[in-house]
Image 1: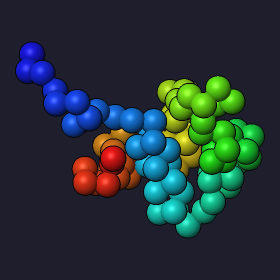
Image 2: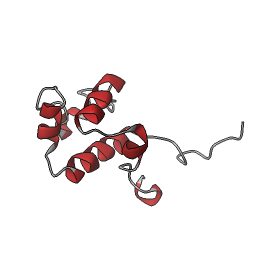
Image 3: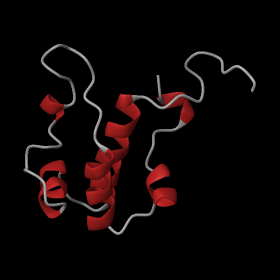
Amino acid sequence: MAEMEEGKGMLTNNMFWRAIDNLAAAHNISCSRLAQISGMDITALNKSKRIGADGKPHWMSVGSLVKIMNATNTSWTDFAKYFPPERARA
């Protein structure tokens, strides 16, 4: 397999959270409302919860992501469109 240049083509915690923000914006709702309609606590998607107390990035579980996608009728292919453009990923 070809080696990836560091930072290129890699998914980051920030990219996932930005995709969630973009998905909420596309549906004209707040992240709190998105969490609520997904069956999660309304604070689950707050910016304060994206970094742990230890300073490490908090990665959303696949289960939570699936709840969000189901609530917004979003496929994996459609969700991928909400990731930031390559030049804005850094």
